[in-house]
Image (cartoon, rainbow, N blue to C red; front, side, top):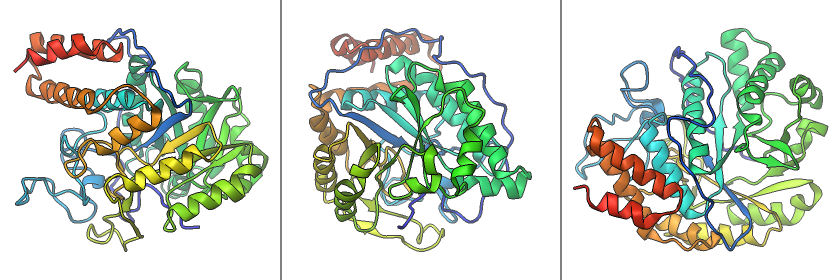
Length: 408
């Protein structure tokens, strides 16, 4: 099986030291009364989320982060079409951003909410000071701190392949490093009411296993936890973790829908819990970006590929779906609004989840974000936009629209 991972670059930046923010769930600076959207589709719909984007203001080295640049792109250059030069065939509607930006986070979460998405599953590299992992951790903390205010859920997809880097560069034994990562998750997040639970266990996806490849490793890594997580490795990889695993999750592969159909029909019935997967397409930028060769291409065909994979998920027999992905621009699987597809993917998801909303609300949220940036530092307008946010998370669209519409 071809493993499609997260950070593909063989040339990693030097470690960047960051100061860990205090863990606060929820962020008490913004008091809201979030309401859950009504959906006709009772399936839990989560979205795989990349927290790894940096701008010169957030990177710690005054440079754009590697996931906007890969090996050879420069977002400071403006192309003939008016876009910044980024390492992707596709372009975010709000332009390249920093994952720690609270306005970006709130914008993303509001879009998810009004699309009927229940929460995020974040691609996570642990707590150790290796490569850009501290930045990923900081950004994940920033995201998780704001999720409760939006009334959504969150969980972790653990990149255990990073344990080899931790061992090589920090000298920490693989299982010890994993235990430290999981101890942090238990202290910081597993106890949150907003953390995704399956059978009363905190959900933990693993993109592998690639770093811990025996049942004994996983048992030792979990040994210090009060509650064992509900561990779901990648499709067909559950046996690698032995009794510590409780299922598997589908992913995007070169064989596309054939792979999904095979997983649902042949593998899923044999595991205790499985997550279906749906995606809009796949077109990686690795070769032009200088990060190796092109993996494969799955045409987006507008929203047709997304619709087809959603249809398979609906009939898969599971209560859980992971959308692949919110914002992996390097692989072209992003469903957040882009200049290329506009709000099409989220509209398709709205129809799937059965919410009563449309692109009207999505466009209102986009306008809210643009005003946040336009009036940054204007205390009066910022207070008005905060009130509009509070109305949006409580599903009072009409009142939010009045405030937003009155701001030029």
